[in-house]
Length: 223
Image (tube, rainbow, N blue to C red; front, side):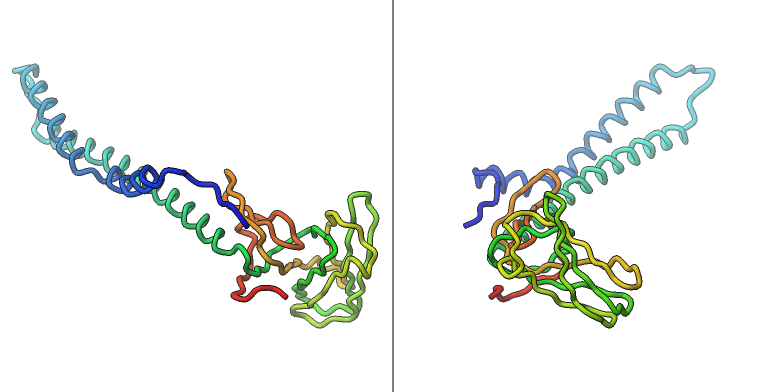
């Protein structure tokens, strides 16, 4: 069963989330800014040179400048709050994928005794198409996929049949045209880990995969 890290106090978490947008557009700050402007205006009128009175348009320009600065501050705070809310939503979405099948863009496999399926996206026809797996010791295993037309080319890696030991294997595809197509791996999401860079999914057959590498969701579970 997976665990997604989060704040343990429900009251503190929900309270801070609901107060963030209000802080970004606090109407009380507008009143404070008007009071500050009136104070500044009185001081300028009181201490201005009687022989060179300040033009009234300058007061308007000052107030406008203060209003623009405050508006920019509010917009910046609101954008930061939106980023926090989007990050939280992404984490909740990732947590909901536990036990579901996803398809991820991958450049490596994390093999055990289970079969791993996926597909290769070819842009050009190839008379010879080979999926290459290389282990940590640099030993390479070639899986011949034969001639292929442009499009999705499915494949299955059976570690037991291929005599591959459990571990991590880098992926590469060799084609006659020299194309280096992307590889997508299908697998169940075992758990989700929250990191500073966003949710990281533990996908069966692909290992640890960042959330943004998901290319397809499936409703059903993998067989």
